[in-house]
Image (cartoon, rainbow, N blue to C red; front, top):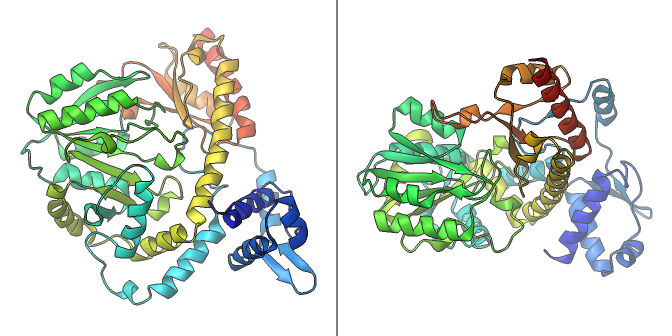
Length: 453
């Protein structure tokens, strides 16, 4: 990230934290240059960029000021009149970190720049200029793909629907999924009556010998996995496990569908995806941009082996003709401008605070065997067991009365597979200052209800 981008990120954080309040004058160009050990031209460029995005405004002969947001005082009044609800169930991105003004600016620019394209249908694979940007972005995750291998989809969910429905060159129809696994894929397979086999996954990963036995049956179309920041476990596979999965896929002609939905939150530069280790083109790489920005964006990317591209594209056009050109164009401008990189760093910093707080809260309660059993992850979610004799609905209703929302992991299992009763804890939408409080209340209610039974 260049100097002026880092300066913008620092100023945005100080504005967000209230150090530079709305309507307040910002430091002079000279003072800011001294403060951040940079040139005056860097400060001027940063201020000009922030002014374009309506974050600040300038008054001649006076200086730069933070923009006063409309209805802010009313919003604060409404929020202060409501009790805080701590939502440990939602996995949506933190709306308080989302740069609304930035993305609004990109949408407006997209309408201007692509106004003619908005009245025609796009290409089968996506906006060519966006694909070029995505190719470079994916390189940063060791996913080196040719442009014709990249297809823009209406979220990862659409990519999965296509892959489940379309024929594969191996001529097989059974799908393997992790247990627990992605609940919407489980529902999709059930609805479409697709043959499915579950393989257990835990904090240690997957039993690779068992996986090889399943692959060796000769009936597996593909294996769907979340190797990084698994949902709901929050754990990641080791390098050796990813290498072995890639080797088994090649040996038994089984395709791997790798859902790398939270790749942008990775802080370990050595944590490569399965795609990197594939000795032959058997890995389909999926990535979402909705999880780091906002669910309504509905833009995902699929990197496909050459042999699957034509079939995948034909099935895609039957579903939606093409992915929203406006969303694609706005994302392209957002990424090209450097805004995406700044947002990624900002949300990583925010989530890292929450991850640290969650792990510390679990450790503080580790004298309780249930909380001691919860994995300490590098991710914003984890799971913990609940007493076998305590019905989840009883616990959920008790916590709702105390303004705590929780969810179980039951829907993340195939029918009949949910034997270990576990609570799913996600802190992406819980203020980091409230995580301790939420965990303490959950413990109190578990103990109260368990003792009373």
